Length: 637
Image (cartoon, rainbow, N blue to C red; front, side):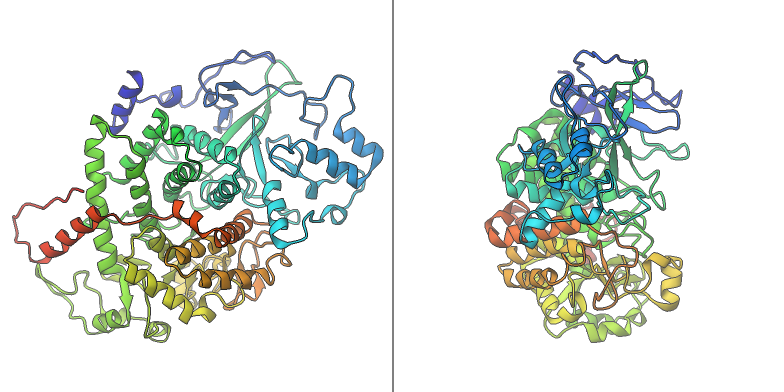
């Protein structure tokens, strides 16, 4: 009964909902907790608290598994976190006494044999220390930087497993990058929701499900926290951009510790932008987990159902916008810096559409969900029509825009958004092939962003936001413009790059987003997995296979960088982190799916017949000729 009331409160927008017994004292501005001793009893609820500097952390008393994170004895700064027998020498003692590399690797690997992990020593901040990062008694990194396998794929698996982060001795995610050469960590030692998606899919395809399940459920608990910046809080349902596992000392006992989760909802991010895509990726990964494992018990849990509804409620909220697309600020997705994508960027719309389809598939039918499902179905129809009709361009459409009349005030206007033909950039004429097309990056009144954004177009294929004909045309364009979009390393995040005065105005002269670098036309190996899923869905896996072969020529030798610079991706990115986890995971997922194409089905969305019929009705209704005062028609699937 209490669970049903909780769900009803969320759907109805009640602000008094207390998710997972997490209580935020807004009036006082901080949370308190009772101090616990080393011998703590099992507790039924998780206890967040706000540290002295306003950090929010989630304690390791795990409600999800009804477990208690046993406190660990701290023997030294980098002490052994395993439960050694009394008087037995620790791993560090063995290393210091022997100095043997074989003994280090053998002993440190024994701890993770159950999952095949290569983790050596757990970090005192709740993370890890891989065997590639040990610096003990003069052992150099070069002597440890050896790959156990004899292939690029084996190396990638070793690196992916070495990036695993543990919470209460359970795997919970992978850090963004494990670059030993970097002196400035920033937030690359955190677990990012969007970054973990390819890692999670790689583990699912490998049959290692626990880490994905733990990630889904623990990030769900973080969703309910109070998020405040400068006295303002965003809507309920926002997922964090990332989180960090920290190990803290318990008060009253200097030898006892516990793990805590410390999330970032954008308060510490560059630009202080909330991550709109985090919740959408979370829903997509949740559905993939159920499809791959056959375990539907996770998505059927009351707290998970509530989490889905909170995300949907946030995304489907009414506003001033006339369009069915999500209105977001710059930097709210993978392109998380100022790049002129504010408004209705394609990437967000493709993920939004995919998340709506996944949520509709997972929501359990009940009386309290009827209105939400009705709103979801109406948005699906409107969104698919809007994107397919107004975002699509090919040579025919470009020629139509070139002959647009402007300043049309009527209900049957052809140029609905008052686009001026002079907006057509000179590069588009050369870039657009005679066969093929794509979905533009953004659409707003009097503005079309003609840039090709890779993730948005690829995920439009995966989610069936694009029609089958449009999907094939996008892949035709990729084949025709291989030298521009792939070249020496797949895949361009967008094309072309901003430069000159346009770069200065749109990016604010961002030195990291110089032309053909980072988000401004840089090449990102992680996009391999989205490309592979899209190609397999359209029965054109040869395109993805060719791209993987291009990547294999140098990605391992280059130490798995985050991105590449220059027009043909000749240089490793100037500020790119090496051993970037989602570059590694993206490659692995691409290889796994090419070896087993049928597995791509748990990531794709197929358009059902009811949605197609509703869309046909919407097109035949021809809203351009709707008379003033006529009641708006609603389409329910």
